[in-house]
Structures are given as C-alpha cells and as structure tokens.
Length: 250
Image (tube, rainbow, N blue to C red; front, side, top):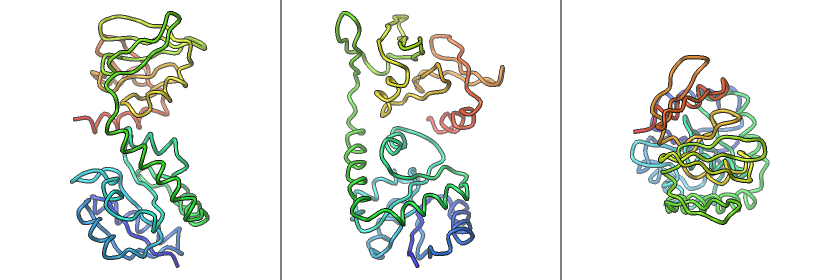
C-alpha cells in the first residue's frame, strides 16, 4: 500500500480526486489533505513518511511549488494538478514529470500513478531538482529576449512582442509598435524559446503573447483579437484550454 497526501484549495476537487483514486488506484491510501501552502507545509512536516503527493499548482495563498521549497521533496514523489497553464506548467512539460489537468481523467490518473510507482526515487529526485532550479530561475526571467536575424542579434522587451506567425521554416515576429521581424527559425523553435514567458500556441500557425489578447469571440469556431487589431483563429483543440488561461488572467 502506498501512502499519499492531497493538497488542493478546492474541497470539491479534493473529494473528486479521492474518489477517483479509490476507484482506479486501490493501492493508494490517502492519509491526509490540505488546502493551502501553510497547511500543506505543516502536514508534510507532520507526516514526512509518504510515498506520493498530489499537489495543486495554484493555491489560495501561493503556488504549490512554494511547499516543495519548504520541505524535503526528495522523500516522496509528486504528481502536479492544474486547471490552467502558466510558465510553471510549461516548465513541467519540458521535464519528465507528470501533471493532471482538471477535470481529472481516470486513464491519465492511472498512467501518472503507474509512472510514479515504477520510477526509482533517485531518478525522480534528479528530475525534481532540475525542475525546481528551472522554476526558481523562472521567477527571475529577463525582461528582454534576444532575436537573431540575418544582420545580427537584437534585444527586445518581451512585453513588446504581440504575436508570432509561422512562415514555412521561418517565423514572423510582430511588435506593438508595428515593427515586424523575420527569423530563420520555425514557430516550434520559437515556442520553446519563450516557454517560460507568457506565450501560448493557439493554432498551428500562431503563437501569441497572452498579455496582448484583448478579447475572445465566438465566431468562426473561435478567434482572439490582439492589441494590434489582428484577429487570429483558435484551434478547436485549444479552445477550452485557452478559455481557462484567460479566466485566470487578472
């Protein structure tokens, strides 16, 4: 039997996850729950001998990652839970760590638990150390980004970039002052380079700065209106995901 703790600020979400675990992961026994960073730290310090932590990324009093900074996360394995994406979630995607997207899918839960159980603790700890270093560095992200063109390397404020668009094996970068740059990189390469900034791939051809989205409109299957007046299509598979993101922007 594997002992686990749930940390999520939504009681209903904890109840649902507990039910899903009881139904699909009978080898997991929940021995404690918490709803905030403070409660989570206290609980983990009181119950340090657990095997698995289900941790919500965003809690009412801070980020779930703050809990991991205050306890010895190398004593257990962590599965992250989230209802939306930000730079922290993107960082997880580029590490071999697991996360569950709300509402929890039973098959995804089973897969994540199986992976956690089968992964050696030492291997998991190495992955977590790499992620925590990346997470800490994300808080100190530079305000400028280097873009290489045919005539050299140029530094621009990240917030000045409105969007990027695929042009075959090239990418066009559009700025709030109307300037446009053509880069000899694919949109996928650019997406990876700005993964810790607030950019989101809303369509196979469009990568946008979330800070420059002015509105989302339900026409032609879904579109966003950018600060430069451009109207861009949203891929059907991205629609629900994007709406979750926009609902969290304050």
